[in-house]
Image (cartoon, rainbow, N blue to C red):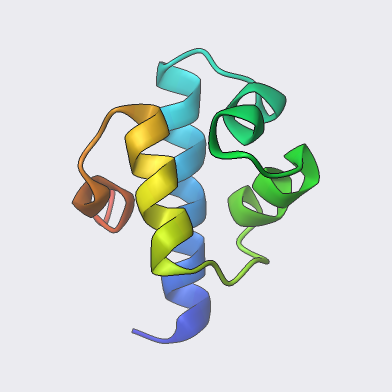
Length: 73
């Protein structure tokens, strides 16, 4: 898997999980202490995030970090 595929997978999973939790990008950003534009870049697959940020996202969404890396069918 190349980087772009990984970024796209994380992007989709963050967007899906955020939507399920009925959070806006701004609300999720506030929960992990980043700007909402940063969440937008993550969800667009245009942001390379750290493992620390990935873990913060998972915690804020109340899911296991592995769910953000899973391939959706």
